[in-house]
Image (tube, rainbow, N blue to C red; front, top):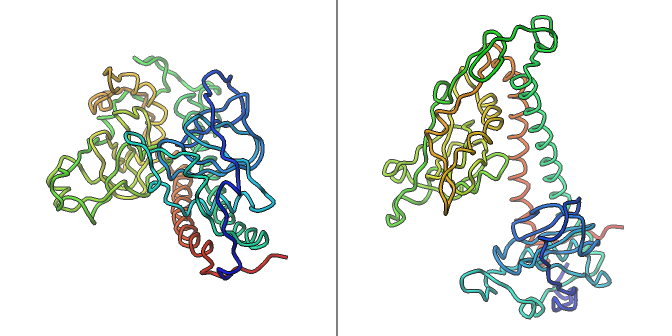
Length: 391
């Protein structure tokens, strides 16, 4: 595809940019409500029900979304009515992702864009046939990423469902392979109520080491750079951690309170995002807003993660603070829970560990697919890579 086969359009010729609206009075429903960070909630009304590209008005200006079907956007996010006689919606989405909207920022305290600026953006657009071919190539990568994410969500839910059935409902298999509690398994009194015979009440401190993160001094440039992955608590919104927020050097690690945590560590956000958890799939350090619960041979990562996920609401209820909610490491260490036998934990992990390994495989594949897509994107858009026209 050569440049002379493209035609230049202003964005205003390709789509009509529309403002989002306040969502607070909407009732709960099935329609996704988008903000600049993604889906915020689901409501009962929609602004539009066709394919659209969502562009931030305020906030993180690089967060461009493609949607189809009913949706709502809040007032910090533009949505678009696309002229499909000129451009395919998915192609417009990928094209806009090549633009550095941060360079168009007109905000002071909060990054902002205006319709006036956006409407003047110039885009080189090929024929509809070539648009379709390019969009299909990039969509195939995104579709595989989305499929892996759905698989991971199902695997995660399956693992936690098994944890609840065995260790909350006490329906683990007895010696005859029957559900323990409903088959008349012996229950004994404890400080946390009736528990299966042979189980104990323990604290997190009894079964695992916990470490609090830290931040190397920003004033020393030798602390920051290639070395160890280091992350902020916001990263815990990801299902698993496969990449840090930044990197710190060996000197940065030694000169601060942060600790290098092994693969499989369960991470807990203790400030701001209190109650959010994730699991490390890489060795990494964290800042002081994160506590890591480190697995061991008796209490492997699959059990620790299931336990923390089940208990985190109770742990997070101990949070204090007015301006910013917070729990501390001792709140985690002192938390008491019902602990099954080591043999049953081993049996549980023999099942669930394979699920966790598959989740990690899918995530690292997604990382490679994302890198490939992002490398191809500008080359396809500027005509550097020739694409065949689909019949």
